[in-house]
Image (cartoon, rainbow, N blue to C red; front, side, top):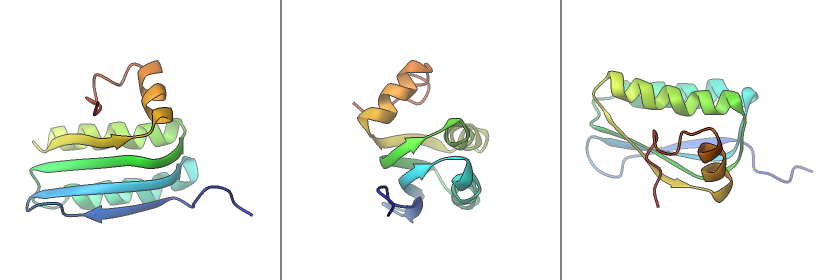
Length: 108
């Protein structure tokens, strides 16, 4: 029996020109393609803002971190504002340890 929910990503439109990707479960090497596809699909839209809600992530490995950084970089390359709207204490600590907390401007 699995203790953690399977990885899921849901795209919400909180306002016109914005997409919020809500990620739940474990973002590891086995889910990178699914997460990357969701980011690419969102960035293919005519956006002004890409938001990531990471409050449902229970685990992120290095390949999952690459997805987050690629989302940040891809948004910047397209002139799309990027914001993380929610993060777990676990993920906040992980981002602080690898010194990405300031780069990604984590919510307080």
